[in-house]
Length: 389
Ligand SMILES: [Zn+2]
Image (tube, rainbow, N blue to C red):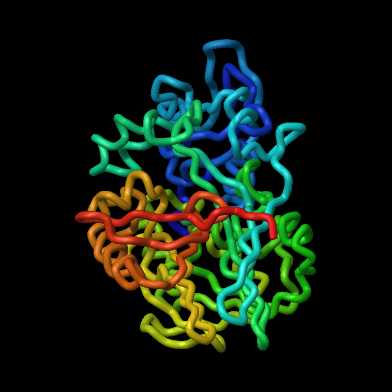
């Protein structure tokens, strides 16, 4: 993190004309140390993680006045001061604070002899003014989003989920959400797991699709301890190497806070990490990898096979079914390699489209369990209905 520290400043303070609400999300892409999107709480934490001798103070200033060492952040205003309004932050479907919180959520089904539990961690919102950057080839669909989706007042709401698979041999968690320190609107995974009746100690294996914070940060606590004390953590070799190499800091579209987040998520597991090769291979009994590089270098989907049944849990090849499935060759701006991301999306979806393989994915609409079909030049997702019994 040498390069990061060049940008550290001592005694940094920020004042905003409006005090950030507990659930407020900032867009802080203008400062090299801070990523986007992010919450104020997380912004402070990440800055201080990367600049151990500094502190970031966020304070209330006079209306219209913004002062502070990180003046560059002023430029993030982008007409909306970079703030999600407190009302919006608390009224959306993924509100994570206060009385408006959703209940912990899990959804169970079976795939062959395996019990599969979808777990809801929360979600995040891509602000309306950030959609063109996130989905640079999707302007036409973006212009119609209001008619295609349940609207979120500030942009595109993207759920964050994870899956627990109990086989005869293992208790496997696939991704773990962003944890309570990523965003105020993530961090429900542990409550969801508890509601499903599974203690963290029971998880013996964690498969990580990739090391973005909303997938991996949930395996560790804010003070650097394991959430899942008995788990071996499996991550792709390419993924691990990418995030550990300072030479790649500038290649991360979301900024260096995502590098810090990736490192922080797996740090407590340094003695129990197993790296798998970036090829199709069984890595745990019943689970095979399907590499999907592009979003990140080691982005991976996992295929569970049990008897004649199968389930592919997607790495990040789909963030928004509405935007991406009809036009799967549309690039994603937050991919490390957007062109490669397109190839991986098509190859991954081709592997299951029109087949009896079930599909899951962290950003599919909750509970994220269904089938993928072909639809013209693209695909369509059909969710399994949530039924009682
Ligand atoms: Zn993701």
